[in-house]
Image (cartoon, rainbow, N blue to C red; front, top):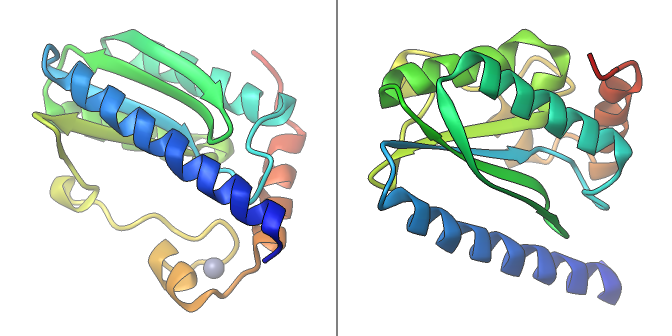
Length: 167
Ligand SMILES: [Zn+2]
């Protein structure tokens, strides 16, 4: 890995750490927190294509989960939003997973749900692990074995975005 990539990688980690602290802060006064981030392989994580996916997902959350947008920003780690959900943690997670599964762009978003800073998993609501973007393996298998290169994953993500339109 060259030096520039290492510096960018480090900046992304710092940006994610800042977001983590922000979420902890919001959690104190919220019922249940929804954290939206994008799943963009490689860099850059910012650009019109990814922004569109982000906007589509924010809209899907607003339409399907009774909630309020608390915070949204974009930095070197990509697009990010935090919502306060007015329904139960379980119901919030079920609806979040439906959004992730329904549209093809859903594969490019991560919607995490927390209550009292504790994250609920897909397993907790009886769902299987998410599948790999490229093959039919569970995601962790491909990540663990490095079955696909970042370039390959990014190309696939770009294909998914290619025909998207703002509705
Ligand atoms: Zn795979």
